[in-house]
Image (cartoon, rainbow, N blue to C red; front, side):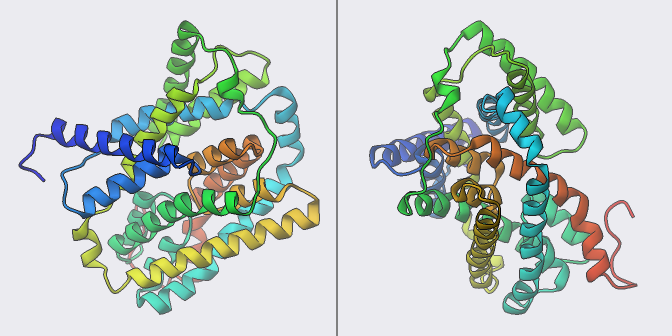
Length: 353
């Protein structure tokens, strides 16, 4: 792949991703631009084509998605979210407990140490979890592969499962229905990007999404809207997100952990099933919509699951809130809980310890 100039590889990856998205949209598949780009670029990479994706473009695309999702936080919605704060915390803790319990299964089936299994099992960022695993004496490559399988597997499966079960809602696509103003959007995006940059400087890996999302949500909740986000712009952003996910697939990486792959794939299925059970139990106990809770507790990324909710007409604000709370709790609780349950004297020290 290195024989081709980087701009050529980048254009090829972006073009393949756009074609994949267009194909999936033509087939009327759920979340077509993101999933189609992911699948197309992953297939191209596995076939040996020099398809690349830009992390910088992915970050800019995250800003577009974050602003669009923030527009769902109307004043009435924000009040409902605050009233449901206990639900958000309970759901997040329950999904983390499912991940922690399945770490034992992954350790046994994948024949890996507990540090590797723990940080591979908890839904979190691939780079973050791999670094933490290495700090506790684990193996970073299996962790990164398991996290990649989790995100991509959930992104591909959840929209199709939800559509097959008929779990649709009647929430309108607010971001696309609002009038688009180019000057307003430029101001909207610039302020959101500054918020994203601030969060990333503070060490929050999802800052490029959560910064614009938080700014958009606060502005919308105050009763002000600068601009909508048109469908074509959202679709383009999703192509960059999908292409970036798909570009992580290489034959070389999988060859290094080929004996671990079956266990990692099974783990994704079990994790999805466990989180779905949590969602259905909470929906039955509290009378909440099962579709939104299924996406809100799903072990996928906040951007992908929220976009799925938007596509299916479900409560985007609830899905976003569930994932944001989980992101916070993952960062706060994952290392200390591992130390409490599994760390032993004499093990490798964690980063910064």
